[in-house]
Image (tube, rainbow, N blue to C red; front, side):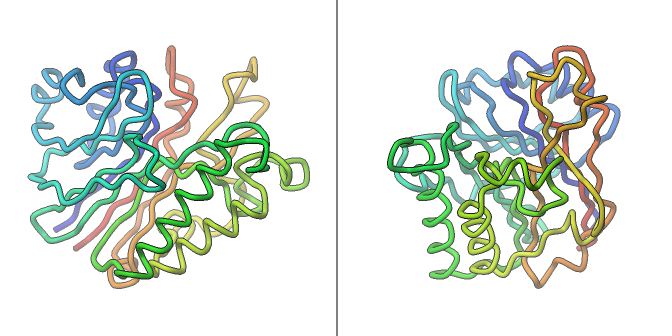
Length: 262
């Protein structure tokens, strides 16, 4: 079985319903994982999705904030929805495909503006979320699993436009990267995107603050696709669909794709 998966921070699924449908029509992933849906589950617009063959969804939502959804044209069964760090936020949902692969969709807290938990509660929440995720993987090592989402960390020097200038900026600080790597190591995860695209600058997010985001190209790779070691070699054809960032009234993230042969 071969299937293609995409992950995308949509920054309001209701506001950008037409962009979701456009992506599905043009790129046709079998599974689309969305973050920052900003909607209760019962308000997520499904009619258009069903009309083009995406009839399966598992999701967690809340009004105006956070929210994650796995939308699929393949049958899926919900397997988990954890509240890491006990934040009471809709930040994780997991589903299993008929081939036994479990997909985890995460929206890790952004962490605010100041990388110091003593003065910035949000940064502490981010680190706690990652620490609990690490501990969960130590307690029960995942198998036959894919983890995707907006993890809000750009770990490598070539995952940001300027390593030196961003070392003290939330999303690329050493303490965040350390937590990120600990989560990967604890679960035996492999970075599918970088396995496929091992060298060069690679971004999935560009700030709204830039008047011309494309020309400035001050991006960060915040969105990730991981796989457990038992299936990582089956992943291929990774890509960031960069031009989506230039659609009308876009999310500030671009979708990240990978295909798996399992």
